[in-house]
Length: 257
Image (cartoon, rainbow, N blue to C red; front, side, top):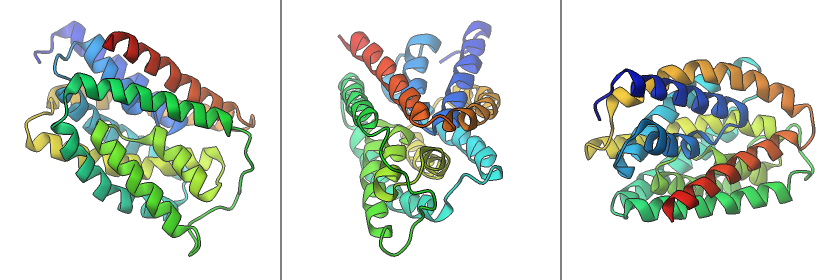
């Protein structure tokens, strides 16, 4: 799309919101990026919004990962196993997603978001395993969660953080702050895999992606700092995460109808 000054400013601000969300909860980047591109910036083709958001979210997730890594929050073994298994799923899922009606894709996406939010709220006070990492016992379970999450991520054109965070918690029992930080390893990998697949079909707007990435760099720093503060309040970060998903899902369902 042609980017005038107003739309460029909207893209930068939208990218900042996406980066802040990724730094704060490790997910939600694409569940914000896709509707922001469609309804705020004014992208008309859902597939272009999906492909472009995948690239922007991957880059912004890498920025958030850097800040969490410096704080020692990342469980690298879990992130590596999850991402490796998920890349195959993301490649298969994104191929299927391109062949699916764009509006129907957004509708299903919103329903999935509501389901995940409900599950996270239900288990927000579950016991945590502070030293959780990928040992021999947990690795197969983490890999299985990774493949399934990658497939959903690729199909819906999302970074997948809002699925990866509960997936990491469910497969290892790690605290949500560690899951948020570790999820960014897989968000980056899944997003790049999906974006590459869409780019091969000409479904990435490179200028829009650059603006989103630029805005997201600053948002990611602020989000990472806020996450450390909320994590000290048990269950609070999980609740914020689920509430964000619900709000965006309801909005997308309303627009679909």
